[in-house]
Image (cartoon, rainbow, N blue to C red):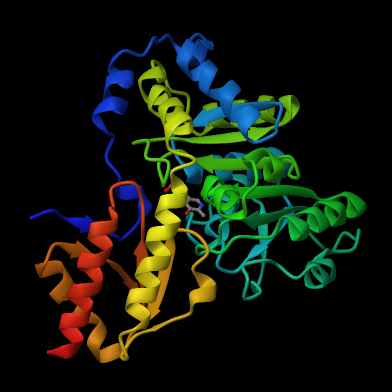
Length: 338
Ligand SMILES: *Cc1c(COP(=O)(O)O)cnc(C)c1O
């Protein structure tokens, strides 16, 4: 039975073509800066995100952590969304390793942060308070795409107030494709950008942290401190290069699949899907609480895996085909009609 794994876009496996370029990658010791494939990936990543430089890191979590450590010092503060990955889902790394205080605020329904509320959270220059240094946005956030206009206004806002601006762009490529922009049109608005190669882009491992040359020099130091210096990492970087070359434009297919899934599930009376939230590759579905576990079990028996954290979560990616979407819709329909 073909398994359809919709729990996350992290579950993709490297294709044969990707494995071939990995096996053939030219490598060197990247801690000496001598891995030509890593160096090339970093150049391509910087250009892709509209930044001067980039650093290849093992994970998105480490990428966000290095951004916090590089922008902020002990006793500084970053303003961030309550549900943002770099606040909620990264073990409090900024506090653990950097003595950096988070100031979380609620997200707006569209995934943005209200700039008036951000303004109220900026601490006065007074020894009672932590120093507010940084604002972090996430795009996409739970599959929602921030508008370019909002991101421009946020960049202006931060410049006026002397704040740095970081983008957790784990799914920046999804945001760019969904909005019809080049990733650089988004990335260039930020002081730093983190991009995951291991989500919808389909590489097995790795993220890129992008920013100015000075910022990346600082992040490079912190990467070493965090144990993120890797040696012949070109094997992994080759997968990242392959992903950037072949798997960006095709994200549009994942978005079409997600919309089709939302439409199909929306026709099932017991399920509720808000089509407005399906802007990229994620579908969140409300299901009566007592039916959720039995539904997930029913799907699992048919080789369909989905996420369930309050709402059901279906994430499309390059290992999910249009025919799989129809199979999922049919399986859900059967469950509720039996
Ligand atoms: C997955 C994810 C990360 C972290 O990436 P890992 O490689 O899993 O550490 C950061 N931010 C967002 C928004 C993510 O979805």
